[in-house]
Amino acid sequence: MKSASATTFDEAYYQRFYFDKKTSVVDPQHMERLGTFVCSYLKYLRVPVHRVLDVGCGIGLWKNIVAQHFPAASYQGVEFSPYLCERFGWQQGSVVDYAASEPFDFVICQGVLPYLSPPDLKTALHNLGRLCKGALYVEAVSREDYERDIIDEDLTDNRVFRHRAELYRRGLQQGAIELGGGVWLSRRAELPLFALEHVDG
Image 1: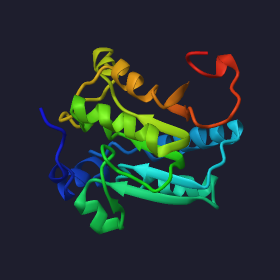
Image 2: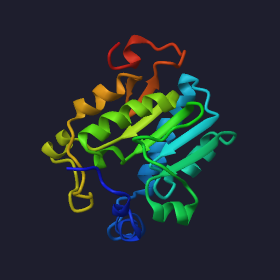
Image 3: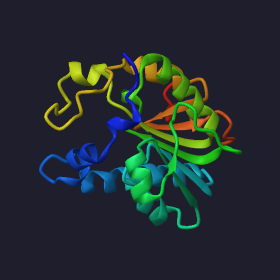
């Protein structure tokens, strides 16, 4: 199977999963709690956040969150969907091969990776490590989530790959340290961590 194509993410897709309140996967309260948690944790760790990359930014749910918590930071939204790039003005690109002249302080990748085939996923995880020099937030459903019956399959897109959690972790651990809650710290970040603050401590 191949990774999802750009045409997958057309107007009908976003109408179904984001704009129609009856079928939307977006929970504003959840996003507020998530954004507060992630950004507050970065502040606690003293991660300097000046440049933010949201790769697979969708409709830009993180843009206002970043502006609220890091008002002086620049926000770069990158999106695979031609429809969203035209509608919101995002930069066209893919997590698989997006490149930047310098790494970012905070990289967000939410709900993107399960659409990638195993070879593309491996490349994307390596690329995330290359793009990030500070903190990384990753959200992706795994096969274990389906096996434990914690996925609402009526709301969730069924065209995703069900990769094992270990596949995600193995790829991300090359460039980052897992802190929990989907938050990772780049191995290039010179920030002290107590042993119990990270998974492999």
